[in-house]
Length: 141
Image (cartoon, rainbow, N blue to C red):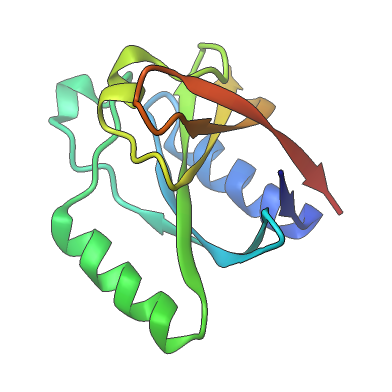
């Protein structure tokens, strides 16, 4: 399985996450699944609602954000396929917190942002038994 992302959307994600530095930022991935591959068609930034003093290493959104974005994706003929967030000054690998709050059927793009600059982007999928994430192939076109 591959996750396919246009260069323009990658740059949009980078800009969003660089602008939220030194805090974590993130948002939703909208797209579709075809033959096991996930194609990202759009990204939508969502405000980090975690307590302000913890935003440097935590990202959260509201249940209302989830519902609103599911409705928006449906209205546009797309699917909510996952979400993206940053790890400021940390590797682009999932944390235990990420695992505890993830869903197995979504893809998760994590971007390492070091000193205000996005430096590494990786994509992950949680195993159905929630034991760990597996790295997926990220294709930028």
